[in-house]
Image (cartoon, rainbow, N blue to C red; front, side, top):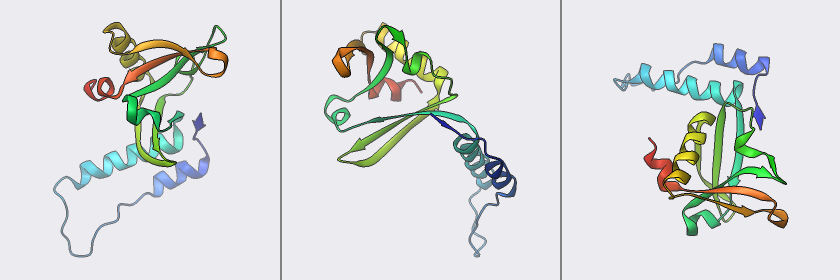
Amino acid sequence: MINGGAMESEQKLKEYQAKTNNDNKFDIDLDFGIHYEKSLAKILSLGKIEVKTERDKWKETRNIAIELSCNSKKSGLAITEADWWAHILSWKGDIVSVILMPVDKMKKIVKESVRKKNGRIVMGGDNNASEIALIPLEDIANAF
């Protein structure tokens, strides 16, 4: 889990200034955009983020795997103290996408996906000791 919070990050946020072109061609929604740039900067620098990486297999299965327990003890999504869940999709060693959402939202998506039988719970990991939710990427996209 990444835990931001360094004083340096807070100072950077206070000093954050939007960079604009010299030709005075601004998007009508510049203030809106700046607000959300600052919001993302705050999440990345000050928030607690649980980061998981999905290697190549997701591209074939169109699922992500989310650990819920290991050796009969809650783990992963079930016990994270993070505010945000980041799920990195990598392909042949390169990051192709990052899914970032509040942990509470990810928990609801997992529960609903399994309830509707789109997602499923399987055993996996070392010695099949982990209970893992396999959740279709489509369910994550459709949750919004």
